[in-house]
Length: 141
Image (cartoon, one colour):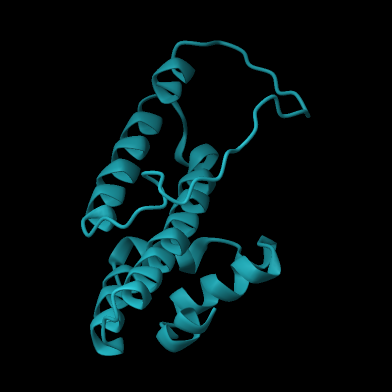
């Protein structure tokens, strides 16, 4: 909804305060494991980019798409790792799932272009693990 709304406005302003609170729920849809989450995430990011392209120059939105995708890779890998741990899935099978995320052409492109040095330390280490396909490091983190 926000992406559709953005294309209809002429001017926007930001405020420095947050007027919402996160409620952490381990059983929420964003925390629960879905085998097809990677594929659905790719569809989502492609749709977002398509909508941005209609009204915004790529140099203005690309960093946001890339920021979203590197964060999504962190979520995807973390969920695969937790799912493997909870279900006693063999490391070689986990590695295969992590490899699917880490070697995807969009992931490779994003991690080549995104300024990883701007991330907080923990996220930066995880991003380097994805970028350089350090699966055991990802599992350990």
